[in-house]
Figure 1 (cartoon, rainbow, N blue to C red):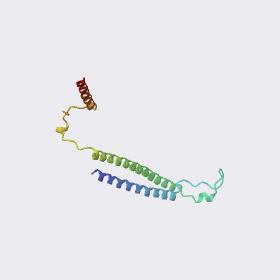
Figure 2 (figure 1 turned 135 degrees about the horizontal axis):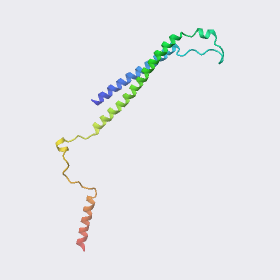
Figure 3 (figure 1 turned 180 degrees about the vertical axis):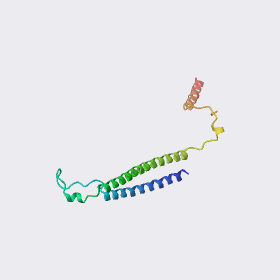
Figure 4 (figure 1 turned 30 degrees about the vertical axis):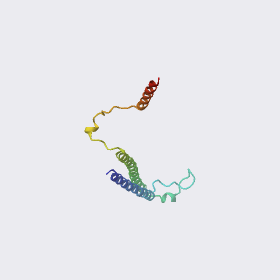
Length: 143
C-alpha cells in the first residue's frame, strides 16, 4: 500500500516537472514577444536616442501586459517548484515509514506483550561470578 502511494507521488512529481519545463518555455516565449524591458537606446551612454531606435519599440501598454503575464507565470513556476520539493519530502517520509514497518519484528498479542516480564534478569557478569564461585569451592576443598 505504501509502495503504491510512493509510485503515485513519483508520477505526480514527474508531471509537475514536465509542466515546469513547459512553463519555462512559455515564459521565455512570452517575454521575447513582449520584450519585457524597453530597448536601450543606441549609441554611447548619455547620448540622445535616435528616432529609429524608439520607432521599432513596441507599445508600452503591450509591454505591461506581457510583463503581467510573465509575472503570473513566474509565480506559478515558483509554486510548482515548491510543490516538487514537498513531494520529495513526502516520498522520503513514506519510505521511512515503509522501512520501519519492514524492519520491525512482529509484536506479540497485547495480553502477553503488555504484562511485565516474570523471568529474572541475568546480568552480563553472572557466568563470570559462577565460574569464580566454582573455582573458589575447588580450591577450598584442596586445602
